[in-house]
Each structure stands twice: as structure tokens, then as C-alpha cells.
Length: 110
Length: 115
Image (cartoon, one colour):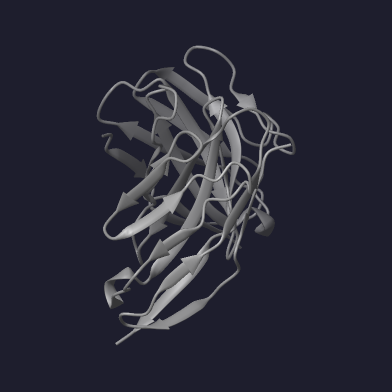
């Protein structure tokens, strides 16, 4: 079946540190891959997406590359800010249904 | 984009009662979904709300417990029936325009506590 495995949190970093949140997936067919973010007290919102192998999604300094050979979609940011503190969800979509990972809580300290 | 209004935002209910959650979208959308997010866990898809017909439920969810209506392309309701404390969770409405690789949009959620 389809599934998403995501790095467990919480992840605590100092401001300007490098961030990686690992995400791997299992899917039949060719899924689209997404990262969603949930800031404190807010709903989920799309951070970035990639629709086919080798695509790179990017937004707000975050990026992730769709790696079909390793079935991965790791989220990276070169220099995190306190305002990046949130919960990050990796997700795949196949036939319009979304499957989400368990979420990774990121806390950035000033 | 789509703006989703979900009501109520939170509620505390007695066990054995039912609660209906409403989801209103500011534009016509193809797909509407209902998710559950239990404390510290991921989002689990309950069902796909189909306009004018019965919802399509995921494994582990049944219509008697979670009846869903979708009378048009902008509105849906989810009822949590005969509630128990195990139903305490955040319930989320989500929509998409059904285009391949389309982004999903989410409501703010309904935080339900059953006592």
C-alpha cells in the first residue's frame, strides 16, 4: 500500500543552522510529493511540492528533491529562523488521495 | 486558492451524543475530504465526500459512525455519532480542484473533546 515515513521529532536547532527532515515513501504508481507546514495555532498550508522524479520543489528557502531511486523527498533549509518553528508534514498523493507522514516538530532557538 | 470555513472550531461533548461539523468553501471544488488528526499523530483520511451520493470511506471508518453529506460543490458536513472519549481529536476538512498533482487546502479544524 501507500505510506510515508518521516523523521521523528522534535528537532531543536539554533538559528542559522542547517535543517534536514527525512521523508521516504512507498507508493504504487507515480505519486506527487508534498511538504505541508502547520504553524502554531494555524491550519496546514502547502510549503512545496514535486510532481515527478528529479523535480525540485522550493519555497521560503526550503527545498526538496523527488528521488525516485531512493523513494525519498527530504526537506532542507540552509539557515533556519525562529519563525520556521512549526510542524512539518511530508505527504504523497495518488489518485487524488493524500497520505501524510506523522509530522516533525521543529523548534528553532534564537 | 480556496478559503475554507469550518464550524465549530472546537466543542466539548458528552459521550453518547453526536456532533455535526460544517465545511464551507469560497469556490466550487471537485474534491472534498475529511481527516482526523489525533493528538501527536498524523492526519488519517476518514472519507471522500461525493456530491449527491454516498461518501467513500477508508478502511476502519463506517457510515453509521461518521455520516457525511455533500449537497453541492461548496459545502459538506461530517457527523461524529454516538461519541466516546476515543473520538476526541481534531477533525479537518480538505479540498482540492481535482487536477493531477493539485495542492490540497485545509480548514482550521474542529477540536473535539468528548467527556
